[in-house]
Image 1 (spheres, rainbow, N blue to C red):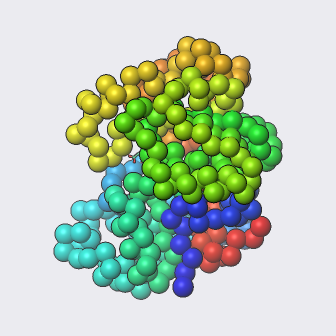
Image 2: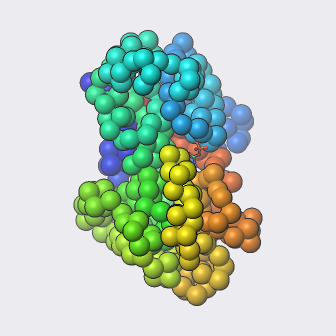
Amino acid sequence: LPRHFLSIADVSPAELVALVTAAQRAKHAIKGGNSVPSNLLNSLSGKTVAIMFSKRSTRTRISTEGAVVYMGGHPMFLGKEDIQLGVNESLYDTSKVISSMTSSIVARVGQHNDIIELAKSSSVPVINALSDAFHPMQAIADMLTITEAHGSHNLAGLKVAWVGDANNVLYDLALACSKFGINLSAATPVGYNVDPSIWKLVEDSCRETGASIEASHEPELAVKNANFIVTDTWVSMGQEEEKLKRLKDFAGFRITNELASRGGAKSDWKFMHCLPRKSEEVSDEVFYSPKSLVFNEAENRLYAAIAALEAFVVDEGNILV
Ligand code: CP
Ligand code: NVA
């Protein structure tokens, strides 16, 4: 059976470090000479990767398609208007058929259960390109971004503050932080609590590494002593109808220099956001400042995609740690 990559929960701390290191290796190679490390050159030659997305995407689509090309393969983008999925054909049948003709499936879905179902019936590795519960390739890119900003692979003891929604990006970021020994404090508005079963996964993972995790409704508490302040959109794809209510409920959660100093973030704190960003979530003063790592974070998606394809498709899930 293929090994799938549906969440950061699917990899051990050592494997996650290996994934981030592989992403960094790919970045250095590409930045240095416009090609991937030699073991990856043509590593997907003659192979197709199905990129099956039921939602919009800029970064994930471009990084995944680009990664496949760097590795010599052929990306096949299948948007929701292109294939029969959901309209004329079940997940089971679609998965059987696509996996019989491709090397892997990179899928962006709504409910996380959909990608679990796809994975169950797929004969090739399935990689999660965002579900309503997890966003693992984003978390690899985020750990690379934090590694670069910190200037070392030893991230244990750093503090990440999340101020925003309780969502997919938070959950895989929290899992990734726990595996690196990074302490994370999340502040979400009242009525937007973290999912208890996912939080339990994070707590279990923290116990392995000694990292701490905390969830509250207080942005000031979250940012106290934080090295990194992170957020995401307040209105995820599929929640557009709740927009007005959410904007009201998230009052006080905007990331500003004022919040960071009121809460007592480290003086050299850095800002991260997976993008796309809307201006309510973070002031322009922060977003376009030297504190902001957002564009490097976005670029790092390419190297994260290469690392994920290397680990799960080329190396068939045998991640060398
Ligand atoms: N961060 C992220 O996943 O962006 P896209 O939705 O544009 O892929
Ligand atoms: N939380 C956002 C992330 C987009 C990359 C969403 O699910 O729409």
